[in-house]
Image 1: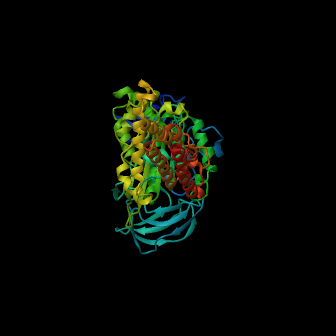
Image 2: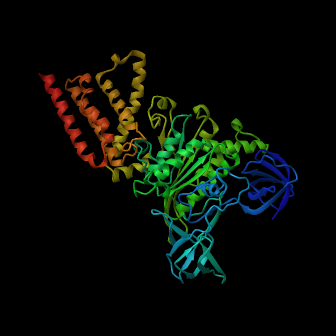
Image 3: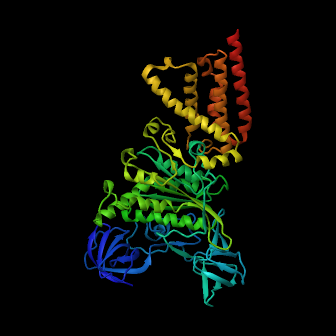
Length: 589
């Protein structure tokens, strides 16, 4: 272990002398208070350390000690339902021991060493195993089986394995490697956060991550194993979108990183998630969620680590064969932490003061997503989807973090301040947003929901784009200059906007919409438009068609409970035919 002394303190940056034997990214303990830090640079035995805790009161001459290992996370039973800070310290356990104040230098293991877990073997003595194989299972929560894997790099024959009630440090199995050495297998693993966990093969994403949010699933879908960005100005609803995705996305595991956002937003998550029931299991949502809280009032350097801690935990569950969704709120705050540390290290600044390596760091983070076959003899398919919120100053997405993110991600849900101010939520702008997964996922939607899904989606998008062009004409020469068909198209677009794209996150029915219900709503809206166009050709007036009572029923279809969807669909269709028939007879007479 390398030992040195502090030479200089500049906020979260500490310069230490006498660290010639230390390595890059080693975790160090700074001063007699044993503050946690990480080595960023080494020059002639002088180490630049970013300290993950408050450094006030530190001075030259105090001791610095390297632990000789990189910043790592503890992986094992006990992760589910936990709340960690940016460097995986268990906040609930700290509160029990220290109260509400986070004491500097506190050393509490991330996972409880005393808790007993019931280990059930999945393999027998005499079987050959290698890194990634599942040797046993622990029922961590009512809905999550924690699969105990052979550590990566191990290979050999199982000599003993038995069912037991063990702590995470107890030996649950012994394997003998090719050199005759015996290796003890425990339920606890450690993994350096800056190194992506390896896998056997990466596959192309071909299934949607169903979210229950209509504007996302129908117009701008994300694939399981895909990456998406949610940029938007202050107040446009980024955090609520992230919360909705965390609550409703069809993922087995949710990892939610509150990175540098306001404390009250993280409080909402902590208050809501334990009370919310998982729609698939009826259990608390926290039973499949890991929370990492590093709010804006916590040490800035720990923001940088929190992103990596979160994605390493997500990769661990992906390797078990689970579908994992990671929410990062927000990557802009993480980039600001990078910028602050870069400035203190006196590195050459790039655009807007961000370090020149911002783009490569963003890419390294997002590239850890994907649909993969895990290591092991029986490789499992797992997916890791990453959804990052971006908070550009003033909503200007031409700034470096937004642009760096857009170069990497394949889905862009652009939040619009004007939509938010007009109370249209989610405030996803349908003219600027896009998804590059639409073509590859179209086949899945057509095969699994309805063969007409993509056709209806394309028609809706075309109507919305036509509306923007027609509105320009209306601004110039007024509504009277439009033909009856164009006026009807504007009405159809208004229905799509107000009744389909607008969704109430706090309504018990509207907060989540199944794909079948989304298809039914799309079909009803376009059926209304098509039948009205036919009626126009027969001489009916637009003014009569747009005030039909059935329009309100179509708009309220999204509030219909799941058990009444088919019946309501049939009744609305019949009402539509009946009302248009009545108008036709009236016109003829």
